[in-house]
Image 1: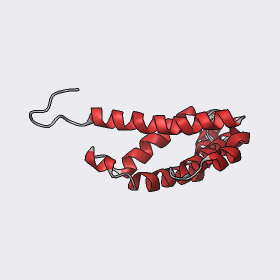
Image 2: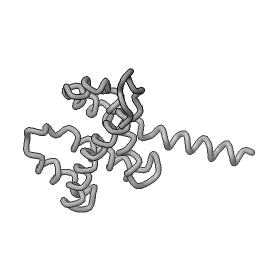
Image 3: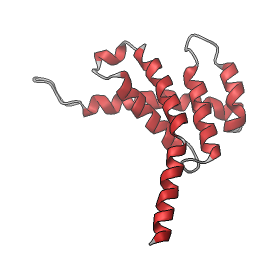
Length: 137
């Protein structure tokens, strides 16, 4: 019984270790989505989008919660999220290529953030209740 408790305690401890990095990623996503006027048209909040996109990103990251390599991936994704869409993102790709393995894989990671955005918007729109007189998509 003690062994099971120790294993559960370690799992809880490790999963909490990436909390700071996850929170930073969430905050950057919230800041980005607060600037997105289109979300209000779909009745989606910046917090809802940030949670959804962060969850999708975190599911893609290899390793187990709390592992040092996983933390580095979360930090790299956070750097990619910080890039202003009107700026050149090549410096961010250069910074994160070591974590992702190559500049091409860093580019794929950046594209996966965009795909997560679209996926979350689609999921949330589909989850909204239909208004009176509105047809199902």
